[in-house]
Image (cartoon, rainbow, N blue to C red):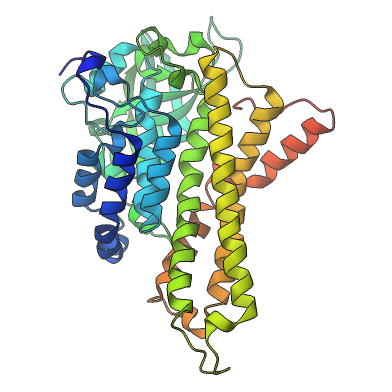
Length: 401
């Protein structure tokens, strides 16, 4: 299937996509325990998300995508996280890759979507690949961890540092696009949370050839590093990579905290402590915890929307957002994890003794949020130090913002 004229792509409205996400929630709840035990999102769930169009939200229209604002994507993701954070996490990772693929040379896009524009791409961006220069491209080998949803994908983005050559005086980072058939999936994922993401290891024992056009200078947001702009010239594809990606791995935690609040509201209305002989709903501490958690979700959501809208406005004008704003927005994305962890801790504590049982519906949110917090993009401390240093007159140390 070759590229489609944009006029032939049927674009659903944002409300339609949100409605489809909400309609899926009961089935996600039913499948959550089995998915967790299998360390895999069920094939039925992936199929339903494909049919709903969730993986097409950021995909170029010329390849059957909807080419919508990232806010639509994040809103759908947050809704799904209210029922199953693992499902939302996998959507966040796999669903952001069509946006990145749109930045590649069009030949790479044709390789993936030419026959089937619903083909999914996995990733693990760790810069651990062994890269050797070759005629017309590179030889790549290594082992990469944390490839969420990889068992549902036909291709994978793998990170590696390209050694200096005649055209480059320093090593530089790239994403290398490789068929899954050239790799081995090592099922290593056995974790306390986000178990259903199936974030296994990707292994290439014998070096494989990756042509130059199947690589992307991921940390370089210049037009020269994005040959796909020649065919995908919408402002969406001029956004900074870091800001699109980091929100794809923090928004599941925002939605998960909202799901935890919903569970707490439901259980607190019914629960009576057998130690204090009082209803949780009448506990002043529980009341405070619930109110502050809900306010935090609202603040996180408003910040997300403000930041994405501002970045999109600059992209539409063909300009970069100010560096201070970009550093701030990067920090605010990482703060989602810290905020969600803080409030889910308090919610679980306010469940009393019943909260220690694995069968308690809030426990999965607690474990999933803390696992999502471990992602390097959600580690707030170095991002905060960079922002603080910049505010005090030092240079920006994060080239990705």
